[in-house]
Amino acid sequence: MSRINDSKAALAALDATNDRLANHMTWPLWRHMAGGMLMTVIIAAAALPPAFAAAAMITAMVLATVIVRDDKKRYGMFVSGYQRGRTGWVVAAIIVLALTALFVVLTQVRSGARDPVFWVTLVVMFAGTSILSLVWERVYRKDIRERLV
Image: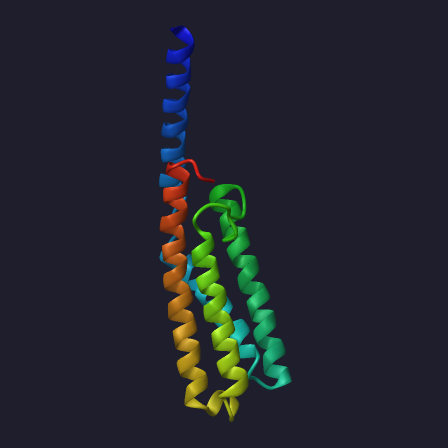
């Protein structure tokens, strides 16, 4: 009988720990928007002249560094979006959005940054990726609580 109680107590302690971890794993809105901006800058670079594309990619690298440093400071580790569990569909949606935006800027944008299609695509990319990042957080936190990660 003692083993059953010990097992139940251990599972209860694990659930409590997972709940505390899930409550701790939250990101500020700016972090989600930074992820959206990072993806958007990369997509923008594809339609820009080489000098501007290089500047955009440098900006993306700096932004990625800021995100990684903030995660390490906040959590002691970088929390990648590529986690096992149910977050896969959110990552897939971000990839589809990015590939679609890339396709649009490579095939539909005729005059670079002067083309309204360029800016509409970037706004959709930024908003979509930022929102999907928020969704990813919710799914990830639920996975932690349900011991799926």
